Length: 185
Image (cartoon, rainbow, N blue to C red):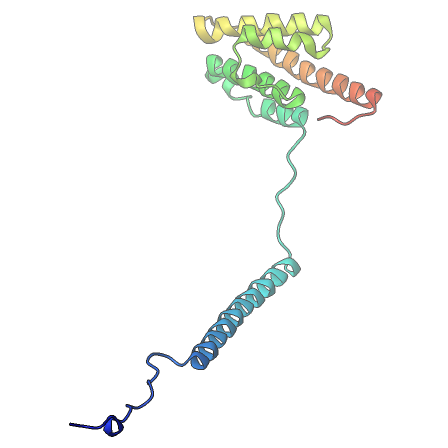
């Protein structure tokens, strides 16, 4: 038999897989590469943004105040008066509702005539002007929905009333805002 002394040990265990030092170096290089890419793209973004600021960018004009926008829209209705009276009254009442909606921050264009008249009662508009506006709107409804034909003289009178209404309400609202010392919200 063999003696125990004849048995020799095998070699020490060999490490399998990646070297931990190599893994650390590879991870550090990967992190540096990602940071370099992020830095490069951040630099390009900031450079483009800075160039964009120095270049003159054309700005859109400020929107017109509600009264000026309404008066401008009123001026563009001239040819509709003779050609399409019904459409003329649709646009005329739309101008009034849009003006009140922008001036007092109401959803006026979506309101019916009855809802609109009820909502403008609380706006501090002169009672006489309010009664005339109510009368105008109700008459406009008969033209728009019942198909009545207005006379050219009546149409001119209504256009003059709408112009007066816009100017009066805008100046009254401006005075009220100045008296309160606040800003129109």
